[in-house]
Image (cartoon, rainbow, N blue to C red; front, side, top):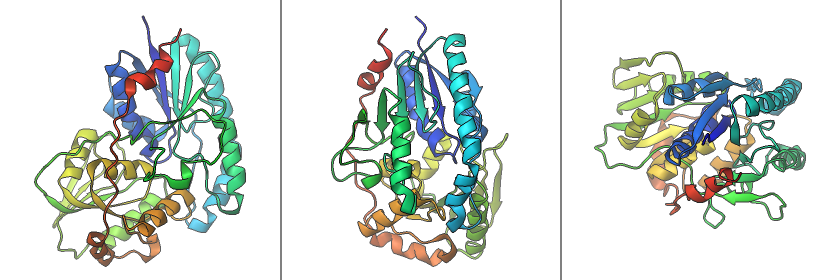
Amino acid sequence: MNKNILVAPLNWGLGHATRCIPIIRELEKNGFTPIIASDGIALALLKKEFPHLTSLELPSYNIEYAKKGENFKWKLIKNSPKTINAILSEKQLVKKWIKEHDLKGIISDNRLGVHSKKVPSVFITHQLTVLSGKTTWISSKLHQFFINKFDECWVPDVNEIPNLTGKLGHLKNSNLNIRYIGVLSRLEKKVLEIKYDIMILLSGPEPQRSILEEKIIEEIQNAEETIVFIKGKVEKEQIKEQKGNVTFYNFMQSEELEKTFNESEMVLCRSGYTTVMDLCQLQKKAFFIPTPGQFEQEYLAKKYKREGLIPYAKQDKFSLDNLNSVPLYRGLPVMETEINWKQLLLLFECE
C-alpha cells in the first residue's frame, strides 16, 4: 500500500531542514515514503541528504534579514505581503499534490499553508509563543491561529522542567493539540579523539550570515587554537580550504558534521534552536552569538546564560577572548528522552 508523506520545512537558514532529517529517516524505517518539499538552501540540503527521494519546490517566504538588528521586525513586516502570497500558493500546491502523489499525510515544519483537511496534517514548531517585542501577543495569537488548522502540533522538547524552550514552547493555557516529542537531532554522541579546539558553525539567512563570517575570520587570524570553520553555505560541491591552523568548509552533510562535532572541544555558533538540540544531544559546550534582532535567538541565549549553561555575546561585541568563559558554564542538561516514533506515526496509519 502506498504511504506517501509530504515533509515540508521552512527555508529559514538550515535549522528547519536539518531537524526534518531524523523525521525523514524514521518515516523510511517505519515503511512510509517521504516526499520532500521546500525551497532555496533548505531544499538543496535535503536533496543532498536524500537524493533517492522525490523532491518538490514550494514558493519562497522571501525571509530577509536587515543589516541592522533593530530593523529586523520591520523588514519582516515589509515582506509580509510576499509571505502571505507564498502561503496561499502553497495551499493550492498541496491540494494538487495530494491527488498527484496520493499523499497519506503531511508534516510541515513552520510552513503555515502546508496542511489539508483530507489527510492528517502535523505542524512542527518550538515557538508556540512568537516573541516580537511589544507585538508578542499579536504574533503569538496569529501563529496559534495557523497551528490550530493542523491535526497535531509536535514540539521538539519535553513538557517537564528542565526543558530547552522555556516560554517559547510552553503555554499556560491552550486549546492546541500539542505533543511534546523530545529532543530532535540528526546527530549521535560518539567518543572520538579531540581534533579541534574550536568548531565554528554558521547558518541563517543573509546578510547576517556573511556579516558574522567576516567578523569571525578577522577575530581568528592570529588564533593559536586548531579551528574547523563550517560556513553554512550549501553549494553544488563541498569546498575544503586550509589556512594555517584553520580548516574551512562551505558546508557538511550529516555524517561528516556529526564526526566533526564529536571531534571538537567546544562550538561557536548561533543560538538557533536546532543547533541547541544538537548541542544537547552531543553534550558539547558552546558559545552563542544570537542573530541581531531575532527575538527567539536572543531569548534563548539570555535564558541559557542566566541558568549558567552557555555564555553568549552580541555580534558587534564578540571577540575571541570571550571563549575563555566557556569552561565556567555547565553546558546544556542531559535530556533523557527517546522519541516514540511508532506512536507518533500512528496518525498516518488511519484510513
